[in-house]
Amino acid sequence: MAMCNIMLGHFMQWGLRILPLRNFNRVYWTFTDPSVALIYAGFYAVDTFFWMTGTLTGYLMLKELAKRNGRLPWALVYFHRFWRLLPTLSFCLFFIWAFYIYIGNGPLWYNYEVFNLKECSNYWWSVLTFLNNFIPPNGSVKSCMPWTWYLSNDI
Image (cartoon, rainbow, N blue to C red; front, side, top):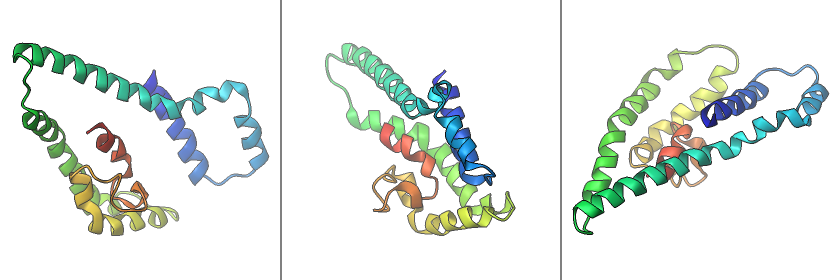
């Protein structure tokens, strides 16, 4: 349910940002309708995944601590986490950096995407080190893949 709520919120957000609007008043009255509250709740739906990650990690760590008499190799815990995420993240980053500009077209495509690809050449390393929420200093809007903010927070 949380994933559907997040997808619905993003669909509405991007649809209103990119598509031309003929009657802005109709959009305003649509979003003031109480039945649209589910779209607003999408902002908090991401917290569900933070809760699930924390619960599962806490449960598994408590099991591991019980097996190892209260000692846990923290370096291996972080290495395992990086090793699981880094290969896929590296592939996606390379694909977007090298081929993303050739996938789309249209009058608005180059306004949004070319800017991000220029910044990608400067800040690609911040995505791979999971520091993209801090570097570049103006926020993750200028980074290669701004949607990876969740992975950085999760790490």
